[in-house]
Image (cartoon, rainbow, N blue to C red):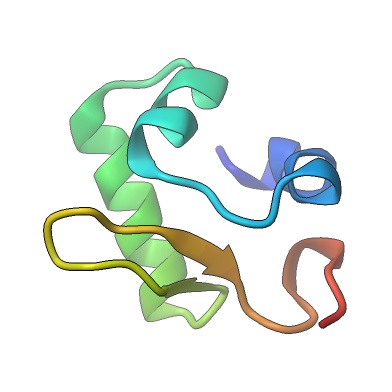
Length: 67
């Protein structure tokens, strides 16, 4: 899901939130959260936000990013 858009998205943006992922992937809230959980559990996304306002950034070297 996110893999097909990730390199293009993270070229211009530094972070993503769940509603934005839901919008670009044309999916439901539930499926967007499952995708985010899968990517955070695998270490590809890092949550730098708060519990009630999560903000996700790509891990170093993931999705074509270099920090």
